[in-house]
Length: 412
Image (cartoon, rainbow, N blue to C red; front, side, top):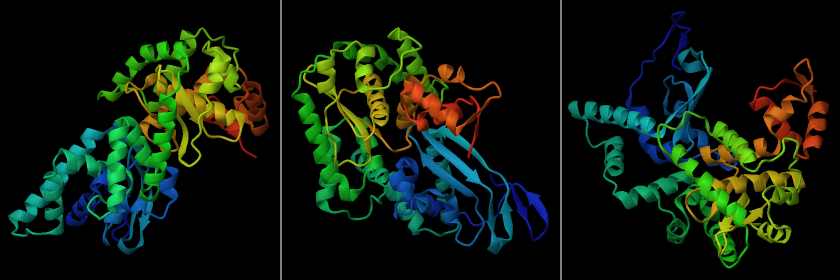
């Protein structure tokens, strides 16, 4: 990522030369965001300056640094770099690429880098700097302080600023009421301003679920079987599958467990209930939850009094409702913690898994491949016809074709 062309001397090289203090200071200033702020449509499009917290070029202070974005996903941190030009330095960074590394390895590397800079300054007699003071605060934080800082970092905020006391209390209450997995996904997609109101709505949804006896025993049994696979994903190193590959794998496994015919079309919520062998009336009640005020939440699941799941799904179209319901089903079936589970618009590992599961369960890649023309090219019209056959959206079919490399899509 540091391969560059130096226009001043008309040559290329692999390294950059600059003072390291600005880089270390930027890392420390954005420490909790760099490690825990998962990207989402809200974060990327909002005015909060996501790039300034995650793109290394914002640490340059007049020097040349590559356009490198550091994005947490959960157990991994994604790195993505692009070619870029630095006019003031007459330098062109030449390469682009992506990588995903274990969260713990990235954190260890950042710590090593910052410590090296602090030690070097200390050796030169340069001590009470912003960098040294902030780094001492981070390194000296106890377990409760670290948990709070991680939570605020997920919100895209600075834990060392002074948020309103009521909002801080709302954060503490939410974390104490819900499983850590749901808390992490919730914080990744919301904002300080919405924390209290959306937290109350989710709490009301869970309370509503807890009061219901839904009698979805087949789903409860499947949850016990499939929940074991989650342990593999949370252990590092993982089972060497990308999050979306894990979602695909579970969809195929589940179709096999259910002995679902390859020709079965998952075109409606009612059909989905039939596939799982559920009583129609019980299934209709179980999918009647509402979450109108939580804009970033696509679907949610919470346990009823008999541990059967109660779902809330948001979409204006049947195909969108089925896709969102499949995402929530995946979360219910594979999350070991009993409690609230969320499908959101963030790009965390968890959300990548449930999106991939939903796509593969609704429209298996091997069935789509059978409908690809012999020239391995599909038009928008072809995609529309395949989507109609599967009873799903063109977006799902297009994603499956692209993600599985089934064909070249002819645009226009």
